[in-house]
Length: 91
Image (cartoon, rainbow, N blue to C red; front, side, top):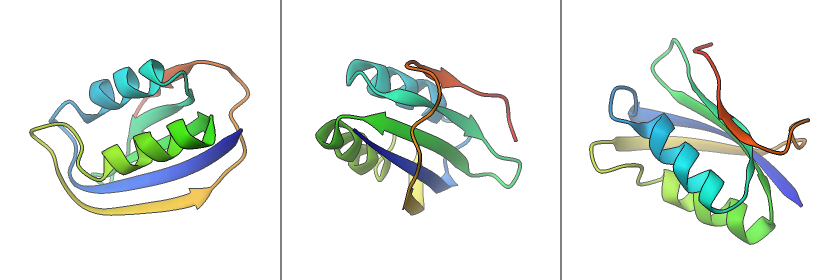
């Protein structure tokens, strides 16, 4: 099991990024969360099978059709305490 913390910048709010990422992560049986941040970025924690985490992290470089991702920061993280993938409130 592996976990990654992502900060995704660009036109990523108001384009369905959180719903898109939630569906993708759940489809890959990942745990973690996604949320908007007040600075206009999207933050996520992905945890699970290393190949699935990497697949979803790569997909975040494109995002959903209306998104324009300009930068993504990835760092290793600890797995979340829960086994599901959720949307959290804006931080």
